[in-house]
Length: 296
Image (cartoon, rainbow, N blue to C red; front, top):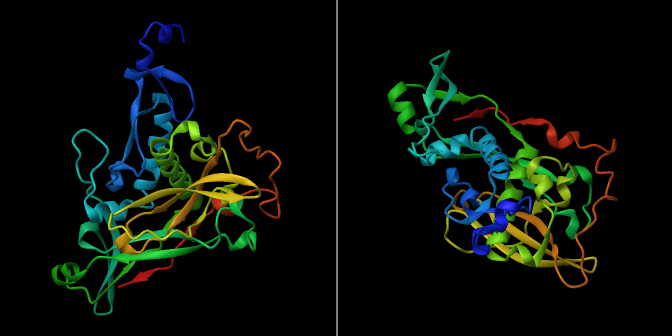
């Protein structure tokens, strides 16, 4: 802090995650939707290096696993100086007559396949859910064309192995998108932030923050991220609605970012919220959930 005091106050900024102040020269821009998914909106000088290391690691985990096929299909760049498009391959099984053969082929020659969660209820901070086990379902998204694959390789049928999805990582990425959007478009001084523990992976009570949205956005953008205030139990919450790849009919998600700041309000105390599962833990959300085999 002594070093900060010697600087022009305009050159001292606050990290949107940890809340610490740093010289502007030490800060980095923070994207809402990851740049690796074609995201264009970002908060200038939003993150300190320590916090951005955490958010970058989270993004890479999801972009290289759950969403790697989508990225390769669209040709989104890697997050590096050369901005190269990832050349990813997928192991598939192709049938010649009655014989099946296993081959590795570029994803760009295949359909873009992904497994994503589709939530049943809104975040529980906005109201009760019908059941703990009714929080989410799964969608297997299949897009694109395999015509060139059939022509070039002569397969009569192809089969793609099961895929998995890590619910907690998807929810953490949605929380990251929502928080950055809220800080830029609403302002850090307007709400008590709740999502940093979620983004870091320290918060297991995910259904309280992430769920299904009731907001319908008619825009034509690839990704739609909007914000609004919602009331529950006499408290106002800042919410962000997120729909990635709208043209592909991805679900719309709702994320509770925080409660409204005022002269009389305080940050929401979540210490007494327990009992999300019969054993009091959160094992359901950390399991790898396989998608069924996909036949084309």
